[in-house]
Image (cartoon, rainbow, N blue to C red):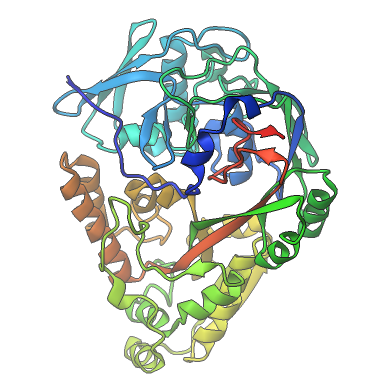
Length: 517
């Protein structure tokens, strides 16, 4: 086997101040206190392996850890793994584990726990398809596992470090249980105290936490983590106004997201600091290529030509956006340059009407589904509907709550257009995006042979340049076949009380390495 360094390439939308703040003087750090984080939604599950929800990720990544994590640069770095190596043919991986790592039940983590956790993920995990190329897992010794692959999957280690539906390591006895039947036991810096549905989750510092000695401090979602707070409480507060008022009174200390309008008001309060992250997510519109009339390429091309993406972004984000065409962020290793740029933000009404005429469209109804839980989803649908109606498309808007809309999108019928923020997927890298368009569960409900071939190259090519070219092909096909519209990039604003020290915004509100003044 050849020795591998942690592999780079996945984007992290981390604040540029992170490195400076990570070096805060030790004498300023204080233990103690309860910090309260207000978030809009409650988690659908605290079984970290099975859920993609941001509301769950905010909490679960304080409780659980994986073999690998993402650092501030988006690189994949060892977390519970001490090191790893790969065979020259990429058909096996040997992963050595850190010794002395304790679960919250005070049991030491060993290879049997890791093997059981990975095998459970293959059965139930939110991204279980990424385990499909694993043939078997062997225990070499108490602190070493060997993973045999059916065929090469070059993104496998990156997958093991993804926070999307994380490959969390559980005690073997918990890993033997079905989804949502586990006791909430991880290796993270905080452990569960209480979950009161519709109200809050309370965590407490795990005093036997095994901080990773291989790092100097916090680094993205990995590194050396230190828990200063006695407890961390995540409160579920659906109403934005209530969250903002609670921050002003000091009832809560962190808001995971606020609107630009609220930020302008709150930044006048010296007790509050506002933090901006750009980019946070893509705003997209997916098209159902398996249902008339959007099964007609000319109709999809007419939609692409008609949309004024910048108008949609300006209104739906209250001005917190940037216009970029890529399905990877600029400056990251898999950004595909100008591929697809000529088809981005066309706003060409004459061309749109011409394409619609060529399609043979005869006034058939298109259903635009959207939810009312996320302002930018709702606004994107409303504005895009108006723009498409202006070229003669018979678009009907159907608004429902988020769970209903998400369930509707998964069906092959009943919808033609669907707006959604895509945030964690580009952060994961090219595979995180490519999987949306490939395989049997693709979001456009049409399996494209060109996309499948490019995805196979992305997964198997040993050379990074070849994998980058494969992703560029995927991006080109998505633009040419109009399986989705990349509208633009959304930023996010977070807010915290000013007495909260060393807080740096990230993909989740990290409450390790943060303390009160």
